[in-house]
Image: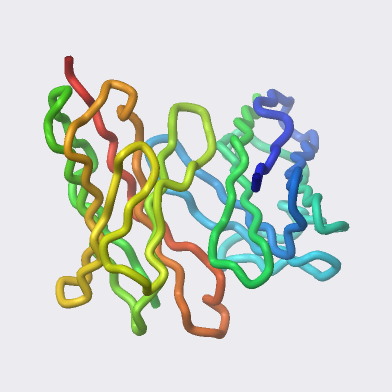
Length: 115
Length: 117
């Protein structure tokens, strides 16, 4: 149980285009989803926290207009990188937690390469 | 504010040897503590967690960790390393306190474990 699916696993796009990444909880309802960014050989940095039906809470320094997060249902959250540039190239990982628990279940991550 | 420090970005052991990955935390209140493992180009898999029950926590794949409040540590150990244990390991802390930090995980820098035959 507690499987989180992230799609796509790898995406290459041209500079200036937008990319959408999906994060789904397959066998549970995720009241909260988290989006992380991981640069090569570095740890995970939390970008934002999203609760179903409400606006995401972004961490300091994360541009909310660039990284659009939608958490429309208890099983799906999306991260859209708008007008992507090469510096946005990174590994993006989502996680989901069940309300009242303290465990986050992670997706397999999405590697974004912006040319 | 909470923080996590993992001592040693790289640890190398021989197959069959003891694995010890160090983690120290800083938190205003005793936190929840976690160890995750990450294989290349994959997400994180939970190894074990401490949530205030027994201080010695057993996880998957033969790993265990001991919460020591006096030392603010949560080191990860495994008696005998396998080749398949080669991966990157992250210690993480989650605050029990409310406010803006509630529910958020703060990760350490990660430790890459290499296992030699």
